[in-house]
Length: 447
Image 1 (cartoon, rainbow, N blue to C red):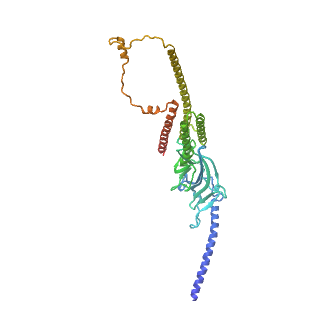
Image 2: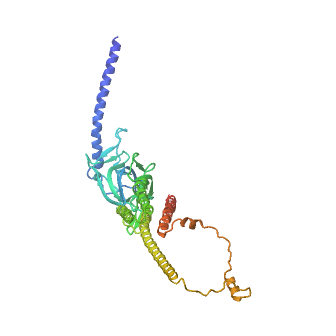
Image 3: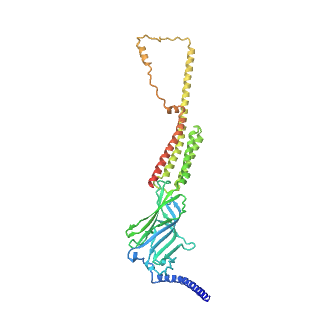
């Protein structure tokens, strides 16, 4: 029994000692971290103006590996040809001057928040228009220094970047917007940027854009040569596809409806001048307003866009319907004039017949010399008359269905309306077939 109590007392005392040593080690660990920072970044020991050496301590260029995390894409502007993006930007390189003892793996890395304490690559975004850091609640930036001298720099930034667009297929287009990063002062002899191996660019999963869909993204290199040397450059190409459903509902269907409404005038009576004029002018002005509103949301480019072809043809159809009424009105007045002339001519013939009958009634006792109506067979005059009175029979012509159908409408104005009822929809349907076939086929070629 005495030996057992003695054993448990020794065990309890050993546990207290180990706990005390652990607490002391934890406190000493934080103190050791401060000592390491003072040791590697102390005055006269580290100069942030000097770049790190190359691979394995050589005089080659410093290698900086880049990776990005795209947090959100706020807007893509067609007028300004730019887009706004928020991302987490990371750089990683090795600086052998920052190596330290990790205390048998207890000190995994050192953390800094002041970028000016260590050497930093002079990277800049070459197609940047505007940009800002995030400082709420604290500056969203950190620097980690690992025991082997590896440095990880991470920062959250928001950028507005230029995105030159080709709008020939708008709104059936795809746009490629780039994010370019390059060295400002160090040439490739001193500094080289490389994409981090594995997955250099990551995009948030629930990324939603109002009028675009991010189809894919590609990483590439874009080194540039100037008269001062060659500079390292990286780029990310973001491929955006424009969502067509918005434009189908807001532009294409309303334009089709306006064109069809303009055809209603073909079914109105040709005498309803106020109704047909007001309908034609209203649809024309509405179509013009729609066209100007579309152009106001786009930059003034020198080439023709797909939407310009659509609105231009629709405006032409509406204007053609208005001109058709002008032609119908002219033809109607011409038909009325001809009808009045025929009526006057019939009245004159009737008046002349009445005058002749009056003369016959007054001179009923007059005698007329009657010439014989029958001549002898040898009479040359009789033979000549007989030759003139011969009837030449011809083969009957096949009836023309179009002429037969148009003959049901006696006036030219009515015929113009009837022909327009068929011609306008057929031509518009043919235009739709050609339009969609052409631009959808060109879109597939661009893919």
